[in-house]
Image 1 (tube, rainbow, N blue to C red):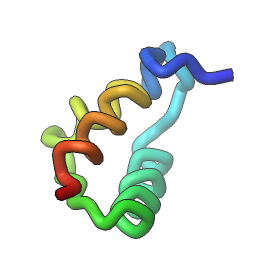
Image 2: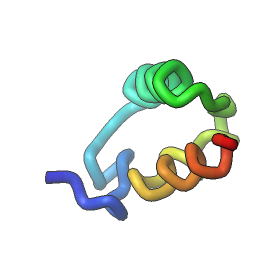
Image 3: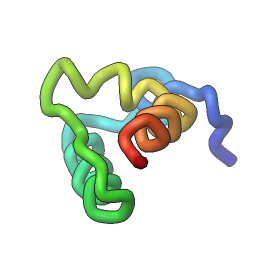
Length: 60
């Protein structure tokens, strides 16, 4: 089970940059949102909660 506040990278779930790219593409396609590239994306992928907040802010 993944805790909503758990870190997705590093010592959290241990995702890497390829995982981030795949996740960004999936989120953009599924939710019709824009995910920035590079360092600007780091805060968005901090946790499941951060992703959900970004999607909520991007959608009308």
